Image 1: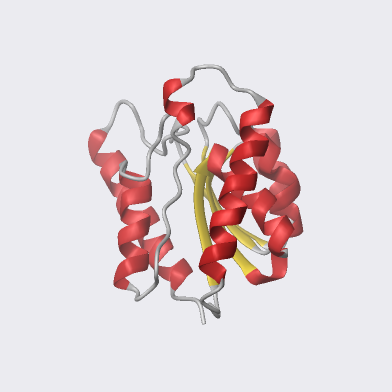
Image 2: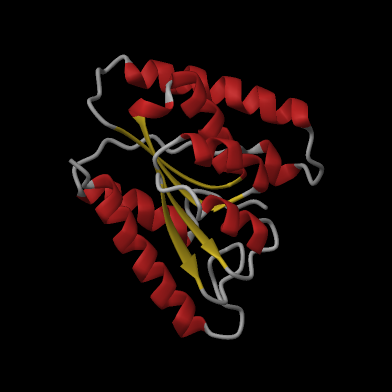
Length: 173
């Protein structure tokens, strides 16, 4: 959907992590911005490239690793978490897609989703809500961008709340 790391949710997630003293590596998937069609070979290539990049970063012997991802990025983060080991990655999945569900249910994670998200159904929400390892946050009336079209002030309040969740998330001991 072309949601870059400079858009509000990920910008403030990154800022929360930086202000908490974390090193941050922002990964973007640029060809998805220029190509309207989804191709599974692009996804596999992206997972591979992101995994290689993260392996280089991990050579610094980090004690805690946090992934904050959105939409398609939740599937990529889930796949990389599986490769690295779900037990060493702390995931926050913002507006996951249905392909992320197997990773959500295999890991201890935080999930934030809106009730009007066309890419993550009520049935998906009900399913992941049954897992005690999932810290689920449901935002009423929010769509996939975690905004409310008809109410800019509510959208800003949602952004503030999610930024607070991000601060709490990266401050885990």
